[in-house]
Image 1 (cartoon, protein in one colour):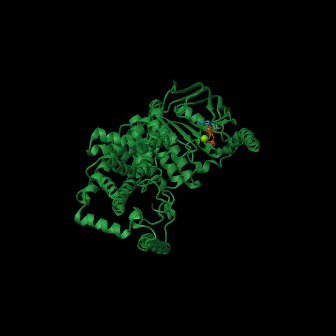
Image 2 (cartoon, protein in one colour):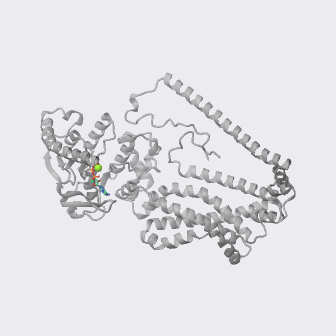
Image 3 (cartoon, each protein chain N blue to C red):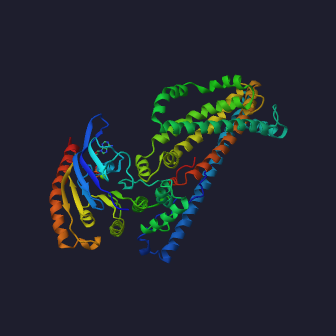
Length: 309
Length: 269
Ligand SMILES: Nc1ncnc2c1ncn2[C@@H]1O[C@H](COP(=O)(O)OP(=O)(O)OP(=O)(O)O)[C@@H](O)[C@H]1O
Ligand SMILES: [Mg+2]
């Protein structure tokens, strides 16, 4: 979850200036104070992490415990709201004996494949069109009412259209994911291109950058912050697209599994399916965060104490 | 490379203001910089110094009048221009090495050659050992020096500098000023050097141009007949330096006062 959790809250950067640094040689005494300070800081950070994890566990126990208890005592009907122990049981049967549609991992793999394919295509299209329209003003002006209009309609209904077009294949679900992902990434990429610092563009032009270089070395790196931020939201949307696509017709997948569970009044099955989806989404989120940290390592590290969400 | 001349003939630059009005930043400004000359420009804040540089660089177009570089009207960015911007303009996603090597690479050099050249320039501005740092890991003055190396590495015929040393501490500043003079003597580029610091202007330049409070135009031009090569740290103590300073300051002071009164008035309304 916290990709940079181990990093010390302060960098020891910029303490020595190249031209004047030779004047200020740190003494041995100040070095030992430094190391003592950083050790104390690391210990404090460790303690804080431990407290956070303990609180998370406590929260989970409180949440699931009160749910379980209130259904056990029949304050609420487990038939309608499910029951944590029932959910765990259902998950266990799915894992050990498989689901009605086949092995659980296969359902997860089917849905993830649809989501990932849709995500990659949607994100790629979004980035390309965002940069193109951001760079070419006429294009943006001509196309803007169409794009805004397309963005305003509830696009998940297109899932039914894609089900007709692509049948039960992967492509109907992936296409639903594409239309959801595309717009988020597109708007961010477009905005990112528009927000590029004028000073930097001027500087690059003076230094002799041609249009291609300007795009690849200034515009895209600068817009990358925006684009990567949009990828976090849009992977969640890709999963939504895949699941919704499966509701419109599928033979396998977590969406189909949840749909079937709902139809047979198996509330625990619905929750179990949602739990698997949530785990997969969290893993994907972690991967995207890792990618983000790799791609924009030039950014100042986050302010210490900020919540690593 | 030999320097190239710059000429501005009755140049006016107007900007559209956000409220839909028109603001005249400079009006009927005429000045000339001879090939190889070091020309300093001083004037009160907001008088159009940066705007003048932008016009020479081809980043902005004149609303009226003519801007000539090497006798040719400026349309687009002229060849051999170097520009040290007033604001931060280093690329935050490139390391110090990547930033300094950008110019040669854009000019067609291989990455290896560009990096080798960049190493030398990084050493010259006193940043050896910081090649792999990103700009956010540097101090403001260090970033400024990266910007300096970034422009100078292209060996410009015309060097436009917009308060390049204002973020530096006094010692580093003196070092860099002397370094700049040595470089300029070796390349004989034409330099337009904008500064708020009249002492700096006189210490460096062949000629000091004083601009009026905005809309800017040339109030006066002063030749600086101090001998070269100069040592910036010492030249301030020459009697001739004080005389020149007196002469220029008497004109500059009036404009600074006008500008100050105006701002006070604007703030009061
Ligand atoms: N793009 C722009 N749009 C509108 N007004 C502008 C623009 N650029 C500059 N101006 C105005 O033109 C005037 C001159 O600006 P300029 O940046 O050239 O001043 P300057 O002499 O460099 O000032 P300083 O010494 O503070 O840097 C200012 O009043 C400024 O508000
Ligand atoms: Mg300025």
